[in-house]
Length: 576
Ligand code: DGT
Ligand code: CA
Ligand code: CA
Ligand code: ZN
Image (tube, rainbow, N blue to C red; front, side, top):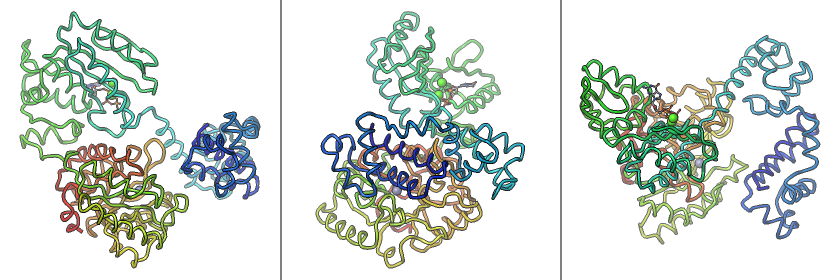
């Protein structure tokens, strides 16, 4: 069992103890233990193997937890945990996943209404049985119903984009080695860079469809990562990979590649609009081509298909029937949307000074390898106790280290002094002006208090944005895809405050976040906002997230001019 597994078990023990009414110190010991181990830099399996005594030096891990770590590492199980679980209704723990529901409420619902799972909780809320309980009213009852709905949304089968892209790329790499296949390309939501992916759609062309289909399909289902074959047909087959992602393969003739690619890239609403447009012109469009009567007049290339309908090329990212077709018909040309190669910097990164894994110099080398001109080190401020944020002393010594490094690197890359400053509950920032004024980049982030009532949250964020030192509002909604909902507040008002106060909105490129979301990127652009696309890297292998952020920016119709780190340092700096 690895650190993550051990942390999860400690968390669960803590929750069970809490619901059972154990005393605060015992509950807290497990919760703290879970946090410590979740963030612990060494693999506990190796530590235990080498010398279990070393566990004594981990702060906050007492005797009871130490013994359990050894037991979990050696046996994969913990007797006490198993015993507790046996006597514990599983539905009670599941309720912990509901937003706004913790051990206290679970205990209340259980003791007063015998509620042991989410289904019963939902029924009770719908019958208004919760509102009579202590500290529960109509509002909190509705919030529970909302939380249940939210949880349903999060247990969806949609995959994160980085996982889907990796799977698609390695599968396509395999398909390219098939001698029958000429072209192969992924389509669907992945090609549109949508934030989550239902399934992967792959289009392939063959030299001679009649002869090759059977051979291609045969090759397709022999891919080593396949868990389950769903169907095998002449032109379409579907499989499920070991990761749980479904892949659909469609094989078409070369002359239909563009039409098929367009059709299966979608989205559905874009396709329907295109089909109607064709109809008005006396044409027919389907996955094989564009037809005038019986005659096929286009199909080989996507550009050609769109041109036949009077349209310029439309980048896949904006094909969602959200104005792109009318825009194309009217202007015959789209703006030059931002591309990955335009990015010159990353303004949000972490090092060992807080919860990052590497030194500043290691990060600098990684950013240099991306060809960037500058980047900012933005470790957490100290409120984020769990992640070991910086105090005033540390931020000073970090500044000195950056000065030295900048000298040493002789301009090969420019390191900016920054900080990801926490927004406190009242909208104040976690560092005073003395500290803030010495920084090149001040990122403001709401990590805690993400469940304030919408009105208070809006005020809090606007107050932070109005701080004269604030430069970038990081991951504005605070959501974690499939895990944590957006904070509730008036986003449009916050965007307006950013525009007025010259605070840039971050598009956080981490595939778990993708925040600002594409919908709000477009709204913010219309209001005159500027953006930065940041990876929020905690180690060099996160640097490649930039492409997902660029995908979101393209989905939001952004050009280079909208994005401050798609330009040199003086352009970035002078905007503020
Ligand atoms: P996903 O997989 O849920 O993330 O989203 P998509 O967009 O990849 O959807 P998928 O895999 O069901 O279908 C791939 C493409 O095929 C879709 O983007 C558009 C096209 N398509 C699917 N169903 C329909 C349909 O009923 N009508 C039309 N016109 N096109 C469709
Ligand atoms: Ca799909
Ligand atoms: Ca599909
Ligand atoms: Zn960060």
